[in-house]
Image (cartoon, rainbow, N blue to C red; front, side, top):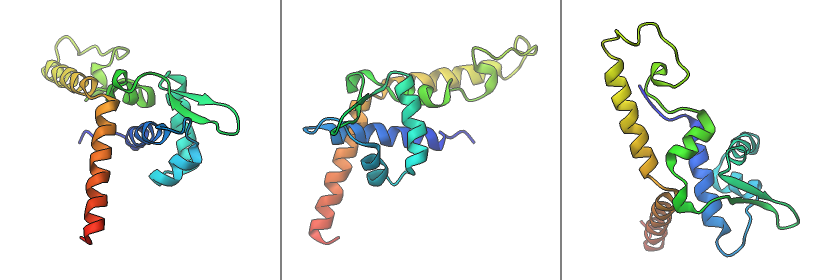
Length: 151
């Protein structure tokens, strides 16, 4: 079964938290992201290192240092995050650019996997970090509302 890795799921959560937390206060510490998202600090450091290496977050030095997003949130896609953390996003290895298979030209299923991978990539490219942040904020507001009502 195809599923996104924990690294990608945690990376999405970290990116959403960085955007949400930096509003009005600037850079966000990894300790805060780790605590708020319940992600091991050591694991988060590896994730954020890859996000930084791929130009999605930037570090800010100093007493109020931490991390900020490196590009506007409407210019970062779910596909950008997934590629930064895992490389190519495909249903099967043979759809990858670097995969060389002698059966590719005669394979009866290659075209189907390639089409599915292309559709997945297009959909992931269309989902922007700004949308994910908005959905997270809406979910948080609903949860707060239910909590206040005692549900």
